[in-house]
Length: 143
Figure 1 (spheres, rainbow, N blue to C red):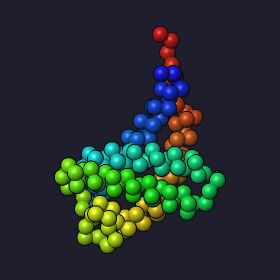
Figure 2 (tube, rainbow, N blue to C red; figure 1 turned 30 degrees about the horizontal axis):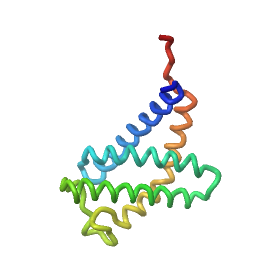
Figure 3 (cartoon, one colour; figure 1 turned 135 degrees about the vertical axis):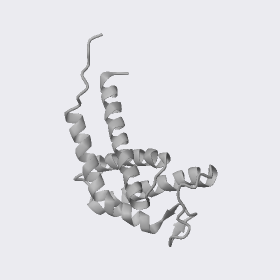
Figure 4 (spheres, rainbow, N blue to C red; figure 1 turned 135 degrees about the horizontal axis):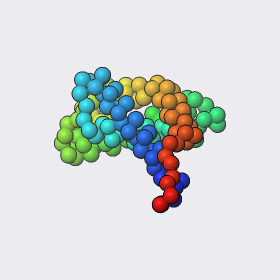
């Protein structure tokens, strides 16, 4: 693995950990509890939101970028919900009582919330990505 690949991996790991922590904290604030699977889901979502921000920035309208993020996050939540709730039976969440839900795993209300949160989260992710790329503190040592 080349040095450039190590830097990219380190950058992705930092973003994943930040996103996972942020997602878990949102869950704690919103519901009062969380689950480790939400940390993993949050990390993956944050990485993807950052990639969408890089792809969209200055090229596409903000609403389109937010809609893309909303679809990605909702799809990942649905797949995760089907795995952890329906298949494994962990009962991490259940949106069955929410209006316009899909199999109790996602609902339109939380998708709308992700649309709104996409603006600040995209900006933060993009800023972090740029900062990490500029100031990567890893130092290659001669071996």
